[in-house]
Length: 83
Image 1 (cartoon, helix red, strand yellow):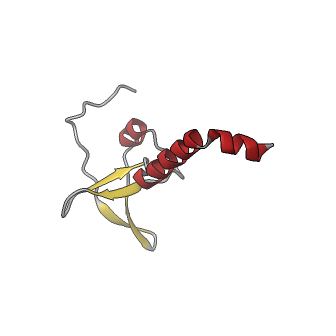
Image 2 (tube, helix red, strand yellow):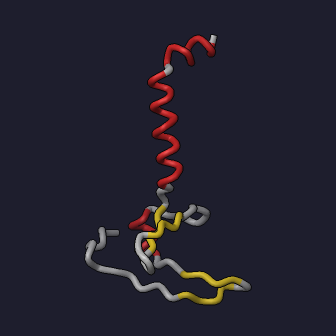
């Protein structure tokens, strides 16, 4: 399956799914986002009515960045604790 052009968009309809409300993602969009059933999407608010859905969690990424920095800064301490 080929890549879709960036400027080409998708329209998703909000609909009733069982007892819930949801959207159905087309196969092409799932492929492009590398998503499959069970994956988690994070909602990131960008403007008053703008939101971004992403498999990337910015809060988790920031926490991991801080952890990596702590491991670098205190590498000797962690080595000693591991003994």
